[in-house]
Image (cartoon, rainbow, N blue to C red):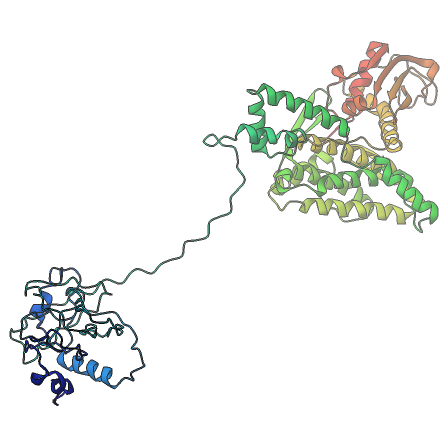
Length: 592
């Protein structure tokens, strides 16, 4: 029977009257006639479903917590599979799907099911029969391949009920409750507890991108290799290495003679490329450019010549300050001067130095009717004004404010001074500027401010380790001339204070007296004659009793109070007492 309730067409052809052996198997039997021709075997029968107990007992790990036992097809599912197979067109090949474990093979003589192809040996064709093509096996679960056309092979004893064919591996099915066994099942189906579902896998987080490889830096744990240090010698010779690389290279040169020799050769070669020079522009460049411009088109309102030195020195100092960083604005600076008896000084910062220049320039600004940065009622002497500024504005002295803020105020005030004297005309040159206990004409006050810009610019350049060139020769000569003209009055003040020797000879005003010859060497130098006995006396070369010769750098250090008078590098000849008095008077020109 086909299992569909109707007679099987193969029963009529190959049933009881077909001469079969009557062993109950599908297909023709051999009987006693060996010459019986072969007939096609009937379609495979649907085996009866097995119970859950029978099915689960032959799957390893089915009930011991391993792989869940696959569910056997129910009778309704087997019927539906058979129906779809019968209704499919003959030339349509059903899509393959993963095989499910079939029912346990039944090898008893009365069983209508065939042995599964994985366990039953293939039948050998009878002698003298022609082999025919093997049809495509039915991939549906529970169905084996169709038997090959030909004579029926001899029945072979199949495996016993205990034999269990090893099923093929298949994806793990979802655990489901075991179905109700059909009525034809011989044994009751025990309840199968499904395995707990596997925990969901944690989400895969993509690994962050690897950071770019950084350039190797020397350290105690990871020192640089010899080859890498040798490759840095060229950059080291050009002073283009970082601080860490420079330290590593120099430490390596102390232990590697070959690299040390190569470093010396490279350093000598760098010296041949260019000579060391200052990064500052030529001090005369600005003057030449202005002179060329004014020669082509004269200024409508020309600047007085005596204000040119201050304008140039303020511009040079501003160029030094323009590119400073925040750390350099807070760099410590030692201001030094000679108080009449000894050298003294005061510690501040770069910002504090510029604040000092601004408040002292405020004295000149107030004399010209411009606003005083210290306000109304400010002290008159430069020292008192500077102390008051540093006391009321601590940030100006120690650089606590924003970098460059005080520079802008000082520079704007300097521009206002130059514009004012340019518009004022010739009469302003005779205006006096009071500095507390002394006064200077406005023209000399501008030279005094130019000299102080040069002195304090040198202090700042020394603090930040930056080269600074002396002023233009014309401006330097004007500054030295101002100092020489102030020496007779300073010498008289020291006598009144008991700090200098008394005059040797009293002379009338305007008559020649004892004279000292001051000789300053250099582009801005010259010869000056200083009256020794009275400021009102006139100096005469024929009355010279002593000579002091020094270069312009030594004169700058002496007049700015940076070296004590007795240590000044000077050539001396003549009256030692007169020489001592003039050297101390020159140092006393300095002040804060």
